[in-house]
Amino acid sequence: MQYGESDLAFLTRLWSEEGIFFFDQPVPDGAGQTLILLRIQPPLWRSSLRQNFRIFQQQDIEAISATLLAENGITDWTPWLYGDHPAREFCVQYGESDLAFLTRLWSEEGIFFFDQPVPDGAGQTLMLTDNEAGMVSAGEITFNPDRQAGTSRVCISEFRYQAQVRPSSVETKDYTFTSPLWDARFSRDGENLNGQFTQYEIFDYPGRFKDEQHGRDFARYQMEGWRNDAETGTCVSNSPALWPGLRFTLAGHPTALLNREWQVTGCVLSSSRQITLQSGSSFIVIHPGGVDITGPVIRLNSGGSPGVAVQPMQPVESYGRGKRELFSGRW
Image (cartoon, rainbow, N blue to C red; front, side, top):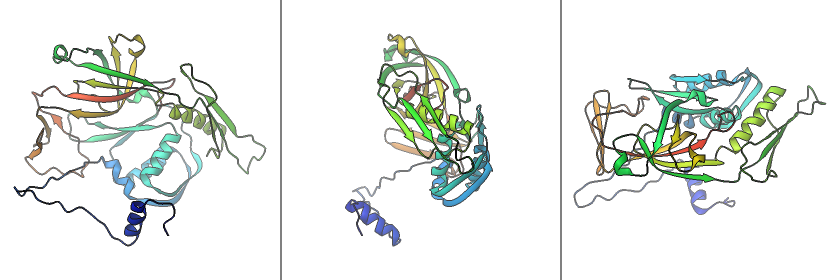
């Protein structure tokens, strides 16, 4: 039955149920060449390939994460947790992929994650943290709109600021049969509302908590999550080191409001010149015409680092998206 689905969604669902896959057959050009696109995913991506139904009892978020990550072969990870995350009475993975289950729990606990390259090594570490103190600081970066004059030192040549109206408060409620008279209701108001109305409330039931500490914490984490993009910025920089998991302080911008600390949540590296990365004894050369790999075979599924820049390196524009750290540095 096709039930409110697009024709494409209906067909792909039927094909997947019958074990049928489809693809486009590339037609070689006159030179007999075919364009191949390669997507490299971090080790955590493998957890999206597993799905399960199970219950965890009397375990905290670190213990549950350790079980799931170990089952997916992710052993190089570090939890930098500054807040209290007590054990849960029970926690259910209900038909979710391991990745969906983990990210849901991490968001409920106010935890965000990123990959951090190992210094002077060929690996990377999955970092879990609940506070901006768990991120590396890139220090102060000066705003300089003159790109020609700013290429000799790290700077930000463009900075676009965006503010938007987001939910202003959260109220969450739950119920436990062991204490039927317990109100189990907690609320949290947003901060730094920038003059917006305070009528935009999120009501959440059930709140998935069975004690007061989880109730208070979950309300706060939800509020911070709903407002994590209330203020965002997009910048252009000549520094390829601005990757997710870093924070920096913008300085010298003519708008004083923007001269504060920002957290990088995404970036795109681009260059009109050649970029050479070294991974072990292999070299990856990225140029306008494509990508060349020389040297021994690089194991793409081994969880290695994205490579180390080989000097000299031409200036690269880095597009980063940051957010203002609100009252406690969580997302």
